[in-house]
Image (cartoon, rainbow, N blue to C red):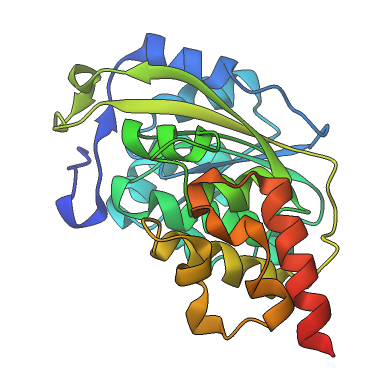
Length: 260
């Protein structure tokens, strides 16, 4: 049986075993989790290494029925750990009762959504090792002051330590993508809660970056901020100039006044 890459699923199958080994070796098991979930296994080049190294730990999920059928035939003794489903709709807590790690060659068209899902489940997901488009990896791992620093940089960086690990050339995939890829690693940090409502923090971050060329004073105008906030000098800056701690502090001050 042959698994064909499907454009509508954003599939580019990795075919270089050395790169696959390097990705698997990037796992640190930070947080001492006991379950590892591979997203989008495709033809199973990562899967084979994972089942060899972590046979009792590894689970798979893929929305592609052809891939699932192929992998269940190849690993019949692991069939119950090979799930056909949509990771974005998956209830992680229903299947995995304890902490998990996530690994995968993430489909290009849903990589950002995967990270937002991780964020929603951050108290369960201790580590992520993922391959994505290089520009997405650079954006997620970027620091304040960088033009590509953005929403995911702040929201993920609030709860995870992020590392850009290595770049992957297009030639190791089938079909060959038009862009480079990269592997990044996220490790859960020690921040459990925010000193403000999380929806307020998220709203401030998203609104600030949606109008990133404007100062925060203009970018956040639509939120009708209290006068005490609109007079703050930090609003003379653009969103890309604020650190994560700056966003948390600003959001906390706004939240206190909105509660009054």
